[in-house]
Amino acid sequence: MAATRVEVNIPEEAPYDVRIGEGVLDGIGEWCQRTPAVAASPQVLVISDANVEPLYLARTKASLERAGFKAPDIVVPAGESSKSTAVAAELWEAMAALGLTRDCAVLALGGGVVGDLAGFVASTFMRGITVVQAPTTLLAMVDSSVGGKTGINLAAGKNLVGTFCQPAYVCASTDCLTTLPEREWRCGCAEVAKSAVVDSDEFFFWLLENAAAMAARDASVAAQAIARCVVFKADVVAQDKTESRGVRECLNYGHTLAHAIEKLSGYGTFSHGAAVAEGMRFAAAMAHELVGASLDFVDAQADLLDALGLPRLPWTADPEAVLDAMKHDKKARGGQVRFVLLRDVGAWEVCDVDDATILAQLAAWNATAPKEA
Ligand code: NAD
Ligand code: GLY
Image 1 (tube, rainbow, N blue to C red):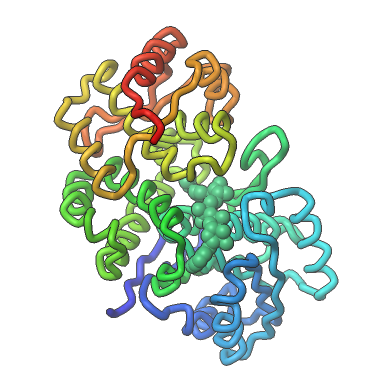
Image 2 (image 1 turned 180 degrees about the vertical axis):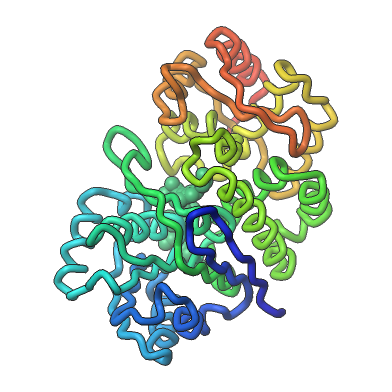
């Protein structure tokens, strides 16, 4: 399968390539050489996590070294807890100890955790050095490695500290997905579904047709889905790089309820993707009531999520507690909860929804929840 190249063109930013395909990781050094912001780097520091290290670090370093780069590495513990001020501080100190200078680069090898963390430390070290993203999860390939959001968590909430820093190059080596645990695969599938529903009929019906193959991890279908998601996200970010023009918010479809589910059920109980899928279903039910979405749309989206292995969650919570969690989410504005609602595939709007309506919708949602197995 030949690699696919998507060029990301964001106003006032250097354009960058996303290369998607089997084995592209083995050419990452060569592509870094072809990337002006990286080519002259005396060192390319690879940051990875403890799960990814034994699988893909040696290959990555070998490719960088073949291309003439000095390639030290730092491995952080796997998991969300590494997106912390403590780990970021350790990385800054280690970068200084390695003698990294302003002309060096950081290469993030891992999922969204490593991508967000490495992007954050790179964008702040010496006021910002170049970052290359080598995503190894489906979620990171379809979403987090493109678009430039970086971040770490505080005790007060997720991603509360971060930067916008576009990568110089993104290397999505689809062969890395073969080792991804099933739960992480489905998590990525939810973000693929989100992109398809928000994007267009063309993407949505393509994915619906290929959902069984996607769920079965068909390599060709997955590579096409990743490329479609990257094209979609690049277009959104090109219109609204810093989420200040009311366009990038569409990427939060399903996330208003998802963040509340993750917080109230305890992070890690459900995967982020499983919570996003639930949030998409809830948003569609709400859109039927509030903005005239048809039941055909609600059902078609449900069929897609079912086919991707993302069933309704056996989860309920006190509507008041859910509303409170939604109000404390960083996407809320002045205590007003906002939902991305779709009238139909591709036809989205951001709606401020009043508390009484949200509480009534949540109560109705609870009433239809599947019982725990
Ligand atoms: P993750 O990075 O924690 O990866 C999930 C798990 O899979 C980890 O245990 C990891 O070690 C392991 N793993 C990674 N690649 C593997 C591989 N190829 N084979 C086997 N195991 C592998 O989680 P994620 O879902 O990739 O990312 C979630 C993070 O992304 C969250 O912190 C979220 O806030 C962030 N995010 C950021 C953006 C953005 O735009 N910056 C968008 C969405 C999500
Ligand atoms: N994943 C949401 C964004 O990049 O804006």
